[in-house]
Image (cartoon, rainbow, N blue to C red; front, side, top):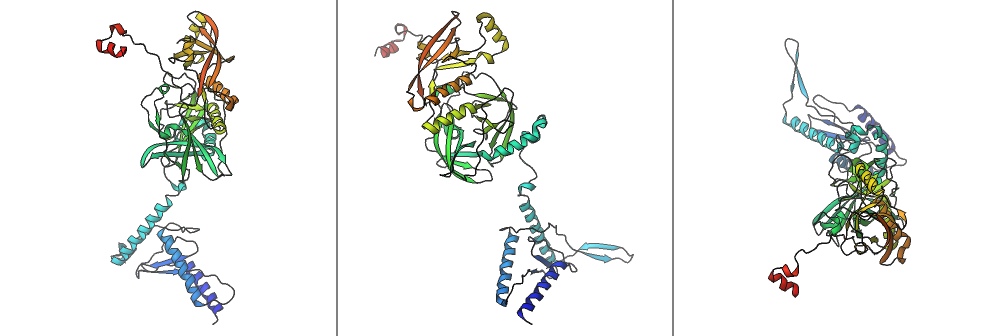
Length: 514
């Protein structure tokens, strides 16, 4: 018999064996991990025979070459059984069962009982372990995970009317949402989220914007205007990409007033950048996105709320009305509307606040073009008349005939505003001839001045304001010469020492004289 005939005969024998795959007596069929091979085992003999598919090729092949190929296939099958590699197609999952003996009783009935044999029992347990290991491997596949983290798109029945379009836009926006973590030495510092804002295809790098909470080491005061927050100068930043990939990030800039940070990382240039909307409507549906410690998507729903900041909060914030939730991981993540456009960045403080995209994009423009984010410091805190209780708005209109403008809540001690006579309760109606209704509009206007001036802007800036003095029922136009700086704006209420030198204790009088 020639070698070619022998090979053809082996191939036919292999096909017939794989087609039959019979059980004998107390034996059973074993599950297989591959589609191209079939295994048959006998429990009585505790032996396994593996039939390998051979492919016929032209020409003569030696018996040694055939044996090498068979050994290679056997090694691959062993790796598949051990779970170290995956085949193109897996076999159907079959649960093993213990073979039984059937005994016919004198009355004609049959009785079944397990076969008592140590070798069969050991083999059954081994097959059972393999069975459960395969189930465990399968349950790691995302399409077979039984439980997903709860989120508003699954558990909130009030979102039924927007659930389907929201699913699509959230999955689309998830492409540019990342997780971030920081540490100093080996000590973890913070965990938050961020999103891609810029891309450099030539250098194969991307820029992520997030909250400066990522590198904040200390927050001794809840009053942001006192500027007491402390930040790490050289933290280690890790970027957690979706799918579980991890990349080393580098902090390239942070801005204390807006609480923003920019991180650069080597990345795949195929990443898509988000689109933005600078028009945010009151009561507009939005979704907050982030990534938790497992890099799973965090989804929260809310509606935009127009409200005045407290005296402890900076006035570029806007707010989200919705169920109370812990922003443990989505700080720094994006807020998107029902068109999938980014309308803001989730701030870490105060609660429920976010930075609108109109302010965010101006900040990014300044940093990208001039290397820093500078803004005019007015030394004033405001609240908008238009956002007050309508009852109060009516009272203001009846007495002073005004229903728009910014009420001065606090004047920084020694500031140009204090020196030119602006006091708490006065109303600033216009800035540089433009009527301003909310503090966010004012912040956009101040940043626009810096954006339009660019490098030609000095450290000082003249701002013309129209002020209504309710104590005297007068309007006046004032010019404030304010500082332009990238530092956080400091606004502190002035204090007066009520103890005069002549009434002070002797020790204090001596100290004051010195």
